Length: 220
Image (cartoon, rainbow, N blue to C red; front, side, top):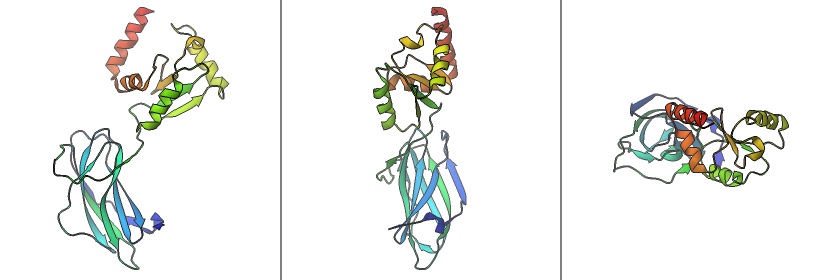
């Protein structure tokens, strides 16, 4: 039976990074399962990392030996340590992390759980009447590891009115749009038909976006 986590005291001791491309730090969380304290690493980056943890403290026993590297896939959570809680004790621990982006062949590979992560730009999908690709795009986003939001424009007439005005003088007025209207970091797109196109826009850098906008302006 799982017990509440608030009986544990977690003290972060140190993090050793041998990492050049880590966008977000590895998160460490724990969970009590019967007489064990399971420690998990959460990787919210979009690339795999190798992680090892060295735990010190009191109120528990752990396997002896040098900590081994565990492969933590992108946007995932895995168990990297298991502590045996001593009877009648509250485990108090500190830890040291080693995180590598130079992946090794000699790592522990365990089953992972996908986690949702923040994309580079916030994703908001406006769902409108007559949208022929909305369901497909939302289905793909549900299966992805990105956090996103949707808004049904039938339920938000004031937002619909804003979008009607926004697209009034564009090449494709609001009533002619058959795709979902997608906001990526506050920039609106009406031409995104599928998930691959959304990823392309999401991962485009600012210079590429500026060139695309200038090209569209010349066409219009």
